[in-house]
Amino acid sequence: MTDTATPLDTLLRLAAVIDSRKPAAGGDPERSYVARLLHKGPDAFLKKIAEEAGEAIMAAKDLQHGAGSAQAFVGEVADLWFHSLIALAHFGLGPQDVVAELARREGLSGLEEKALRKARAREAAEANRASTAPESSP
Image 1 (tube, helix red, strand yellow):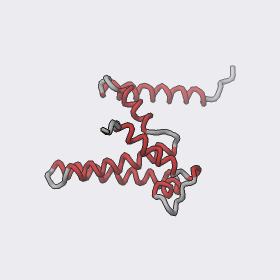
Image 2 (image 1 turned 60 degrees about the horizontal axis):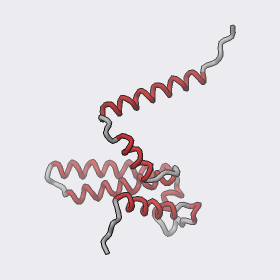
Image 3 (image 1 turned 90 degrees about the vertical axis):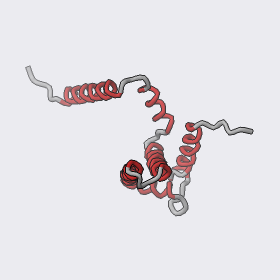
Image 4 (image 1 turned 180 degrees about the vertical axis):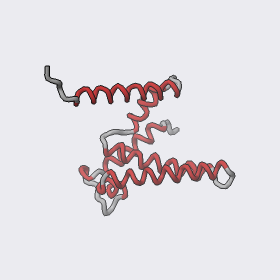
């Protein structure tokens, strides 16, 4: 029998394991690294994401300069993705949400997509200012 699992299947299985380690699902911080990070709260896993991003950058730089390996870089990116999956799980999201966003962006120019995000952010900020502005008396 051949393995027909897709990369998304792998991410979804990993996300299911992470969900099972949530404190609300009975995850034990004494027995599970994921449960420990989730138990400590966002500061803990967000710090790990920043750390892993830095390590991925350094591994890429090493690879660029011939001092590192592709496997080391891939390993650091895997760590970054793993900790990002923990954050997604904490906020009730999963890899399917990221894949859906990437699919939505597919075919868009990166420059156009960035400009669209900036325009949406400006519109949201303006709407927020308008809704919080004090009413003037006649």
